[in-house]
Image 1 (cartoon, rainbow, N blue to C red):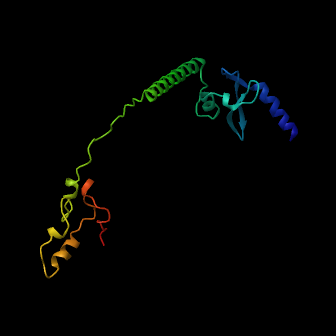
Image 2 (image 1 turned 90 degrees about the horizontal axis):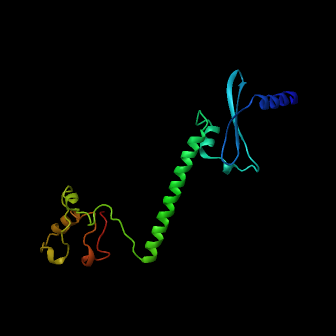
Image 3 (image 1 turned 90 degrees about the vertical axis):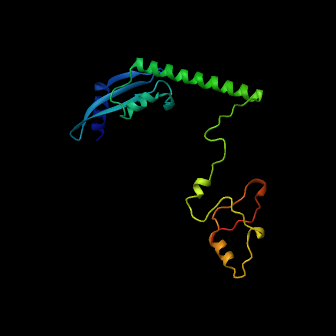
Length: 177
């Protein structure tokens, strides 16, 4: 078993192919070998100096994991690094602008959607027996000795609370039973 491992290690170093180098000096290699009758490509990185995986760029991570078929080219890496630098600069500009607005006390608030409350009349009209403007109270009830009007009022009661602003009285709304 030790011989097989040693032969494999020596074969790995003899037939490996250097695919590329990143800015941190990490070297990337690939090796095509036969495993269980199938040809498989193995990919790995040899770190420059200390073994710090945070120095591996995203594009090389994708290649190592097999998410990319081809290794990233130096031109591609330069282009992506320039794009990242532009994003960093834009973030810094936005942070400075935000800080200046905060110091000046001027903060523009963007309003999204409607500025008024929604009109629920069209919504409540689809339910028979409900009305937003219905008033409940002793002045709106006619005198009915049979109590039929009270029973009808309980059945017609809205499931939504009524009243808003100054006319709203807490505790007056009861959920439907």
